[in-house]
Amino acid sequence: MLAHVRELIDAARQRVVQAFDAEITLLYWKIGCRVSTKLGCWHRFDDIKQITIEVVHRLITDFSKRWSERQLHYCVGWCFACATWDRTNR
Image 1 (spheres, helix red, strand yellow):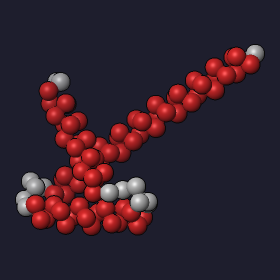
Image 2 (tube, helix red, strand yellow; image 1 turned 30 degrees about the vertical axis):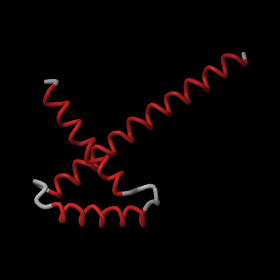
Image 3 (tube, rainbow, N blue to C red; image 1 turned 45 degrees about the vertical axis):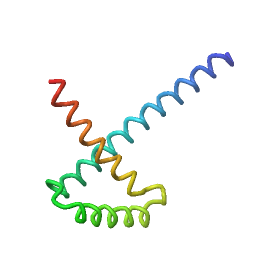
């Protein structure tokens, strides 16, 4: 009986991890697409830098210090990677 209960707990933990990973991936993609849409055609580096800094400061204030400029660029990268993958796998 104990072995079966352990298997149930382990299976539930695995499903939680999978759901979390899926949600984080979707979140990063949505954030990245929103930021890249806001930046348009990436007009000037200074504009991008300023918008990125403003967004990161607000995220840190509203959520936690885990957000950084690097994290935001990672999200934008997710958006481009997913868009590229979608176009090449049709």
